[in-house]
Every structure is written in structure tokens, then in C-alpha cells.
Length: 201
Image 1: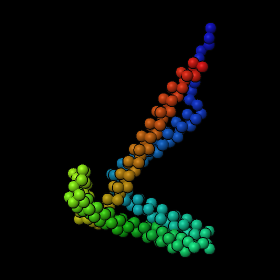
Image 2: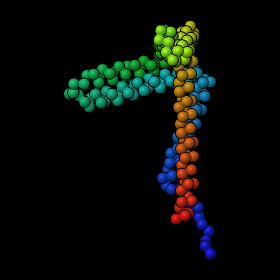
Image 3: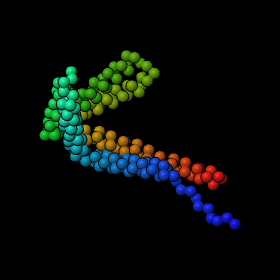
């Protein structure tokens, strides 16, 4: 008579992988929620993205200045100091005036949409390659988007950057969520397949 067999559980490596993928899924869910909230409150998302951008410039400038001081005596010392000083100055300007920075960046984005749309339209008409229709549609969409943002400027600066920032959070969150859930399923499948092999032994 044989005693009851206990089904082997996941290995420590498997449990560690499951926890890691669970953390990824949780982070992805938080980013998805943040992206959805940002799409609802685009003005708040715009100001938040500008403040984050300003603090990143400021911190990056301070770190660059520290590296430049540590590398004094090298030919690149003054270049590092100048780049760090520009980053610090830009960060201070963005933090002190996030609305004006959002207006300037929105104008820049509108001009990029316009120029990109025009180049795609002209290129699709001149080249007429195998992707003619798709390139023409991309050019027309970029041109229309640039005109819409430009005609509504500076009011468009209150929602354009926030919308882009929120969409980036949303899609990054969905990617992390899919990776975390898929990874946990793969680890569970590998554990289930390993269990019968261990029973045979």
C-alpha cells in the first residue's frame, strides 16, 4: 500500500518568476488607470507631463554637472559644464512656467505634423510606390492634425500634450499588463508539465 502522493509545487525559481511577472502586471494596470484618468483630465495630464519634463531636465543637468566636475582636467570638461548648465536652466524655466512651455511644445508639434504631412503627400504623389495609398493617407492625416492643432492654438496646448502623454501611459501599461499575465501563464504551464515528469521518476 502506498501512501498519498503530494503534488509537487512550483520551484523557487518558478515562484520568483511568477512574482516578477505579477509585479509587471500590477505596474501595467496602474499605468493603464493613469492613462485613462489622463485622457479624461487632459489639462491636468499636460501640466503633470510638463512638470515631470522640467524635473527630469533639472535632475539630469545636476547629474551632468557632477560628472563634469569629477572629470575636470579632461578636454570635454567645459562641454559637459555647458550642457549641464543648459539642462538646469531649461528645467528651471519649464518648472516655473509649465503653461508657456506646453504652448511652445504644442506649436512645435503642430509644425512637425504639418511638415511631415506635406512631405508624405508630396513624396507619395511623386514616387507613387507600392504603398502609395497608405502614404497618402498618412500625409493627409498628419496635415489635418497639424492644422487642427494650429488653428486652436494656444487653447490646444491644454489637451494635446496631455492626450499624447496619457496615450503613451495607456499603451505602455497595456504592454506591461499583457507581458505580466502572459508570463505568469507560461510559468504555470511549465510547472504543470514538469509535475508529471517528476511523478514518473
